[in-house]
Length: 151
Image (cartoon, rainbow, N blue to C red; front, top):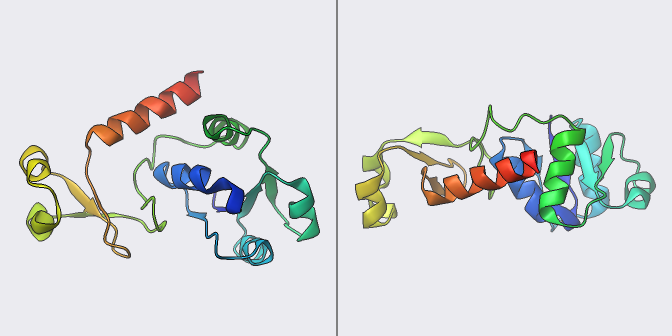
């Protein structure tokens, strides 16, 4: 399943990317442009406004009812039956590109010294260059996901 998130749902879009879902989010694009992308690419248009989805002719949309981020993510996961494990941490949370494993030696000058000493596995976004590793942030994200799924 692939998504387009409207401007009201930036944090949700980032977390869908963390779950491995191809999610377009670009606050510079108009709602009309976002709906056009969703329709052309057969993506689910995520919005908090039924009026917006209908007015701009979204073919496949989901109206987010929850106001708070964790509740929004829980709503989408449960109602759209999303897999939260298989592709976890496979996309860049910034630009939505699939990340690739890289040799530590190729990014050693781009990461903190302590990180280089503590970790061996690194991933990088081939588009924007962001570097990822399984640090404490990964543990926090998994903890939040478990709270959402179980609570």
